[in-house]
Image (cartoon, rainbow, N blue to C red):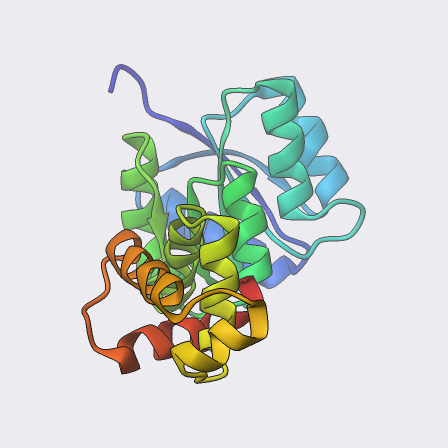
Amino acid sequence: MTHSPTVLIADDHPLVLKGLHDFLIEKKHKVQWTAKHGREAMTLIKAHEPDIAILDIQMPHMTGIEIAQNIQELSLKTKVILITFEKSPSIYLKSREANVYGYILKEFALDEIEKCLERVYQCLSYFSKDLLPLIEIDESIDMLDRLTHSERNILKQLASNKSAKEIADEISISVRTVEKHKSSIRQKLNLDSKSATLYLFAYSHLKFL
C-alpha cells in the first residue's frame, strides 16, 4: 500500500475503547480518532474519511450498522468493521447489506482484529469463525432465489415431510409434476437425490420460504 491506513475506533464502553486503541497503537496501526458514541463517530468519519472505522454495533445516538448505512449512502471511502457480542442472523444480514467489510465478536476482538484489518486493508472481507453458521445460512438464502414460485411452494410443503401424492392433492397438480419440481429443486440447490436431504433442507429453511 502507498500509505499507512488511518483508523477510527468507536465504542461507548471506555475500557473496550481504550483497550482496543492501546493494542492497535502498540501494533503500529495508525489510530487517529476515537469516539464514545455513534453521532460523534459519524461526525469524525464525514470530516476525515478514515480508511477504516472499527465500530461497536450497539452505541447511543447511532448504531454501527446505521453508520455503515450512512457511509454507503454518502459514498464515503471508509470501510467498516463491526465489533459486537451479537450472533444474530438478522444483524449479520443487515451488516452485509450495508457493505460492512469485517464483523468480529468482542470476546475474540484482540485475537482477530489484526487479521481482520490486514484483510480489510486489501479490500477483502473478514468475519469471525463463530459466524460461519450465519454465513452458511445466508448463502443458502441466496440459493433459494434460484427457485421459481412453484418450486418454493413445493419445498415449503416438503418441510412438513409430505409425500409427493399428498403435495399433489393439496395444490391440485399431478404427482409427476411434483417429482419434476423436486428434481429441479435438487439441481438448483446442488442437493443429492436422497429424499431425506431435500426434507432436511426444506425443514431447516422453512422460515425463509
